Image (cartoon, rainbow, N blue to C red):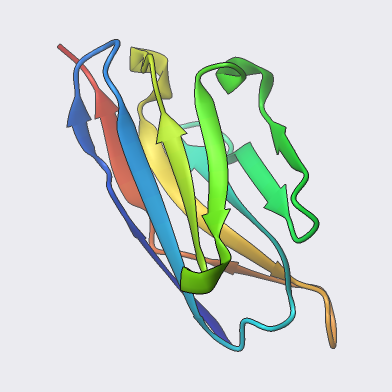
Length: 118
């Protein structure tokens, strides 16, 4: 079992910044990657950013150049630095961890609300 706890969401004005954190605990030794997804009302959940155990990353086109995913292995924590926020970034942001052994399993945090509004 893997538990994920997100923090850092809130209300921010357009152009502002937020930093999301996701702390993993439990059976974390088989985590292959961690990432951030978001889901706005009435829309599909979409990948925002992902970081793999080897350090490679990928981002949604809509956030490239504005968001940065990083990790602190000592703390088993991943971060999402969000800059130049836009109203269309408003969504519930979910932390994800993928375990590949003994089988591929995805774990999700409870979500943290990000609202970008003036």
